[in-house]
Image (cartoon, rainbow, N blue to C red; front, side):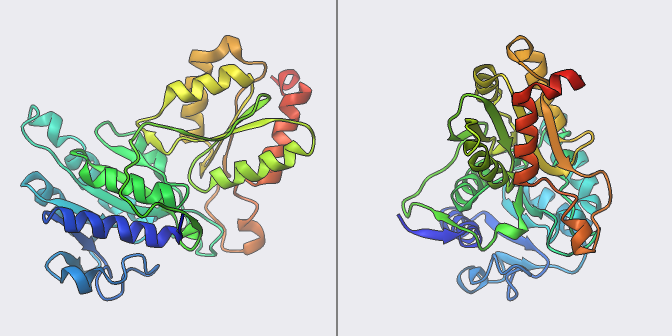
Length: 331
């Protein structure tokens, strides 16, 4: 099977859906000739023209509002939000309009809109361009939230998102755009709400979102050298969340670590840990451990920034504590 980058996978998914459905269009800053600062959308304006690949001024609330209105009246817009940090600028349009219109209209109106943006620190982009804000939108009823962890997931989830009749927010890790993975040439979609078990194990479950999947996979390799069998799982979407698969793994291994690059407090890790505690408590041999980014603004200093995010070594160290019983005594 061919291998392509995550960037190519996103580009390919959007191009295929724009050819399939003429109501699909792209809108955002530097999406046309520039192809975004990360060059993810390069070449699309040449094929589809400026009527369907629309450059906007630096006016996030404005073009997000345009997209919501277009979606309500029959189009399927893909909004490109240059950095996930800019979510704060579109919260009213996204969370008060797009997320609630279907409900407030008694089901008469839909908002089939995709907001694609990014997350992730350690790119040396400082506090206002390095945040991972998926928990903000996951908290809002009416929105779906996808977090691809490889080029394969990026393509399959994007195509599913574009065809969904609900607003979907997709977070891509900006450090993964050049990472390659096997991606079929034939069409495929990845259903929302279906987690992916990447590695089976019996001693501890490692749940990693987005690029934290790779952190968990590397941690599992470190643990294997110690004779610890780790199961690694990627939720793929956090809304909807595949509870059944997560709970089945927790019941099997009796120990769980949840890893996400958003801030640890009040975040995705807390929600997943809470659901496992509520529904698999009597199967657990130790408390569920949450591992997220430090509760600090992302530093610009490389040495400090690298300390703020979960690492394979940190995940493996916590797994060893679970196995030794140390976390039970701490509780």
